[in-house]
Image 1 (tube, rainbow, N blue to C red):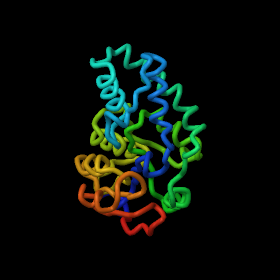
Image 2 (image 1 turned 120 degrees about the horizontal axis):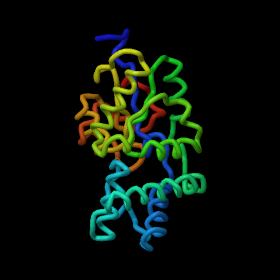
Image 3 (image 1 turned 180 degrees about the vertical axis):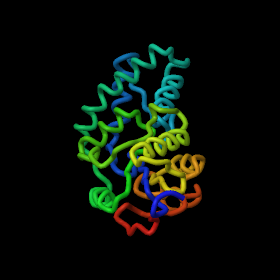
Image 4 (image 1 turned 90 degrees about the vertical axis):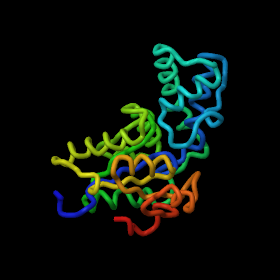
Length: 227
């Protein structure tokens, strides 16, 4: 194996792992549907936590309008959602950075790890959500929902982009995913990576263990035994 240690890259999810937007994401979808179709759609009724943004948009569109969106309609929906997201994130009273995150990220960088994102958010949406807490500065690459609707492929893409930054090939064993949902665990394993389940939001430790997480922590403030 190349590299002087096993772990080189750490791929972190955003929502429920680094931050909680306080409903800003759902609000932005609701505003977009309301503007375009007069329907303030609730994405929570039709989608699961951990889905990619394109999946969320399509499933919600089909549920509330009873048909699939045309390419033009879907493009416009995503643009309107992005438009509203900046404001809903900035205005969210429940937005917060989760415990341990602000201490952990600079520490990992100082220890020489590559930090990347692996998220179902569109790339622009990911950076909007991180911007409020000034967390963008810690990440040099990522895989996003705008790269693929398949979370496992998003993980593979993130690893390949990490290799570009690293300057040589990264094997799956040299990286680890950190996420808060069973979707994160399943996608990591499908891509050949281990996964740390963080019981910091919608799923508890037992649920993450049942999903097959290789390590489980209550929050990112815990000791990093998984490294």
